[in-house]
Length: 397
Ligand SMILES: O=C(O)/C=C/C(=O)CC(=O)CC(=O)O
Ligand SMILES: [Ca+2]
Ligand SMILES: [Mg+2]
Image 1 (cartoon, rainbow, N blue to C red):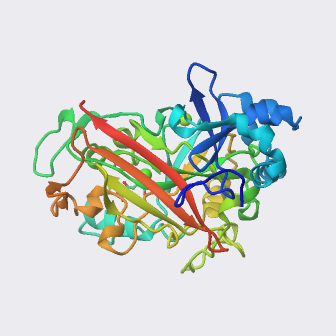
Image 2: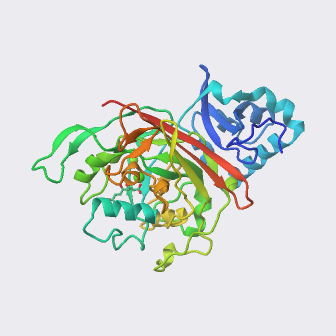
Image 3: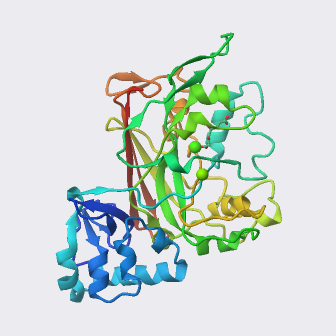
């Protein structure tokens, strides 16, 4: 399908073409598209072909491109698809192919606001059992609105950034007073992140049907979480320092146009009219979670309870606006099987059931541990399409 050589099993087949920002040597960072194990350096190719908006690819973030909206995103995607399929474009493009191994990937966009949802019923049920063993695992609001909280945009970091173990207050249930120190229950959260391109207006809610007008695509998210800090601080206002120290995202933003949608599982009880829609988007994505290179979990996204169109509608129903570069994440994704859980607190049931990985017992993260989350989507036509990966290593407090 392309004149470019693509190794078998590459996440970046020619119909994927995710966008990211790379730094090549001491050159200015700029926008590229991934194909196989290479990057198309888009700024010079777009200039050579006198593409409208070619200069946007010379920017150090995707924000200006993201602000354009769906018609322009689609036109760019058609142009890109043509470039990699049409052998006549080979002479123009080939000099601007750069091996991915020769670049450092940057944060793909400047993050405006960050919201984190809690949309996986299996995860919410597991966490309810672990944090609130004496009550119903799902709180009464959970099936009526997509529960979420506002996170900290300024600490979203590029994949590969070391994660410094956070310090803070914690209090064991049987202790009289809190103590201070490095987190002893440092965890991951496997999530899908939605990247807002076109902004909305203050005072004007975004309807579920307008989701694709605003959201460009998806990234992988690891929402690092300090469970001991979280458990002590979060009642009643929700997550704060236990989750604000770092959130890692993958470098390649995959367009919704590449993914295609699958139906959302049925919702019961019925939701209020502002959350209901005929074709609520959902995606068939499977994550692969590796601890120090060993596969420990494969959470399935497809069973998620809330659609991202409902998340966006809910997040703006009070008149709050979204901006270019906003990121909203699904919340931790867990499937029903033990090896489909999206956090170590679930995988090890609060640390009581250690995982044995390469002969060694693991509960929460230790200094030096490295977690890599990869993901693959199956499109409605059956194509496998990779989302790349997000990785990070824990360094001492
Ligand atoms: O149920 C709780 O008390 C805690 C839940 C979480 O920590 C999950 C969270 O922050 C949102 C998510 O990633 O699903
Ligand atoms: Ca989270
Ligand atoms: Mg903020």
